[in-house]
Each structure stands twice: as C-alpha cells, then as structure tokens.
Length: 212
Image 1 (tube, helix red, strand yellow):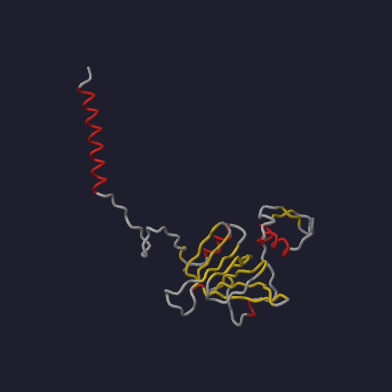
Image 2: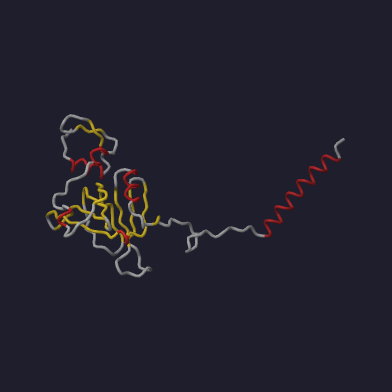
C-alpha cells in the first residue's frame, strides 16, 4: 500500500499503526525503518532560527509528538501530529501545528530550561514537570508528556536537561527529605528470635547426649 508521505508515516507511528521497526521503501527504492525516517530532521519552514529575534545556538533537534498537558502554567497549544523539540542554550523550543477553528495554525513555545524541575523517561515517553515563572515553590507543577519514538532518543533529550531531577516516584515510607526511614525491629521480635534459636540449639544437644 502507499506511497505515503513523511507526515502520514509519522502519524501512523503516533497512533501505533506502525512500529519503529517496520521497514519502508523510500523514493529511491532503498529500504529504511520507520525509526530511520523519524530520525531525519523534520522541516519546519516557518520556524527558522533567524526569526526568533536574536541569536540562539541549536544544540539538538528531535522529532516528537505531544501526548498531553496537565496542570496550569505555560500556555501550550494542543499540538497534533509531529512536532519539533529543539534544545537551545537556555530554552526547550517546541514547534508544531494545532487545530484553530476550522483550519490549522502553526506556533512555537519556549520552555526555559531553568523551569524544568523534574524529568522522567518511560520507554519512548518523556514527562517534564514545569515550574510556572514567578510562582512560589509550593505551587503545583505543570506536566508535559512527549513521545520521542525510541527509548534512546528519550534518554538523550533528558540528558540535555542538566538542572532537572528525576521525578520522585517514592513509596509512602519515604519522608519529604527524600530519605527512607529505617525500619527498626521491635524488642518483642528480637526476643522471639533469640528464644527460637536457643530452643533449636537445646534440642540438638539433647539428641546428641541421649543418643544410645
């Protein structure tokens, strides 16, 4: 079936109709995987670096898709299909298109790297927890879920977020300081253990002494 353009293939990958391992045939008749195709830098002609109003160094660029946004904070459009995640000197730039009325609109969002408090990688998904600019520390964080299409790419993106700490998926026994409370055995359990060991030793000695 086909042929399909890049946008269609990426859309099928986002909807999990295709996996990263599926093999495609490019326009030159050469085989390549979906991961290879997605790994090629997408073209966003409306978002050139020289249009940002100043000089910015692009350190890395990744194709991705927006999974969801939870919480209030940065105004992030409901991007559809493929988006571009660009790591720059001090911001994480997300560009793509979204529904606007009966048509489509393209836009970009710049997330200051200093506002990325936590980051988590789950398979090919990256979750970012963002701090609202000027908000107090106690203010709830905003979560942004991104699909990076491969675990390796997801891990590479998070490595650029030097100030972000892992999301604290801590059990209930972990206190607010992040350290687990030590579990100390009760005195009752200690005496039961000593009595049990003493009884076993006494039984063994009795068998040895009264052996005919």
